[in-house]
View 1: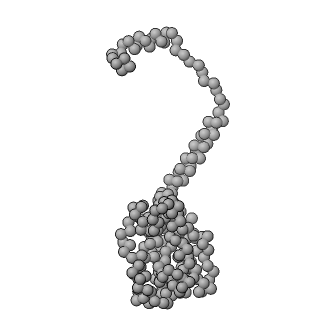
View 2: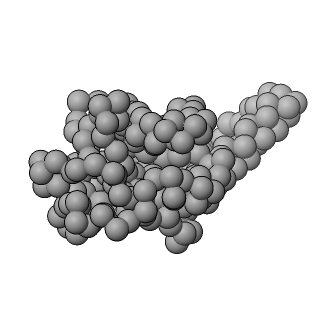
View 3: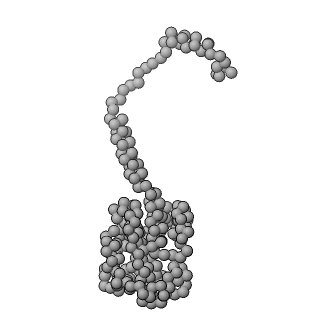
Length: 227
């Protein structure tokens, strides 16, 4: 099972208002384990980057002026995604920007049905608690000290670790073992049910056995039940 943990950095909050993607970062998981394969690309947004946004991700106009525009990287980006499930923190935000870029190229939108939204998972698992990436890193003891600015590849890598914790930790084999154990227990219980019922055999100590026991007790020194 292949999944892609994905994050974007943008020029603002609203793709319908003309804001664009400036960075994409992706981390590949196979069977819930990182493979080391990544996709990372800075993008010239073909517009200015507001100062208040630069303070969030540190990407200014000078940094991306010589980077390719989205149309030049779209094929490689979509090839990396292939048909894999996309794991995204607040999926509607990133998918909104990606699909706005694809629409400009006349390319079909990526459906939301292929996404897993880790914000929704976190809010369901920890109702009332903060569900942002920094808070989840703190909750799971994931080192995010290098996150001075938001960054697409850095955040995708952190999110991959958060996602694995949200779905039950980084050892999925233990869950498999648990399922196998449950199956074995169910078979054992079924075997017990199928055994024919036998009445318990009556047993009572004979007079000779009682007398022998009484003589044995007399030899004990200061038994606790007589103290």
